[in-house]
Length: 66
Image (cartoon, rainbow, N blue to C red):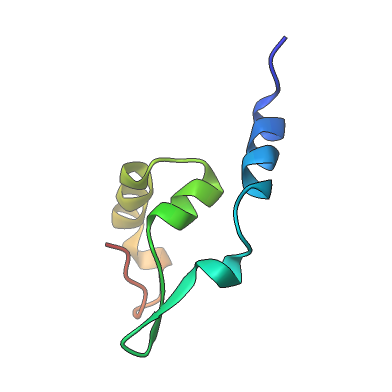
């Protein structure tokens, strides 16, 4: 019998470093690489980028994911 989806996700989250360690400083701006939030949410980077593109109005003006 396999593990439930929530148990698998919880285990994968435990293997990620703390969020503070995923934030980088690039030219004075705080940056998260798209692969990091994708891993947190358990989706591919393509799916994450597509969701952001489809929901641009939900993100602050200074938010950019590329």
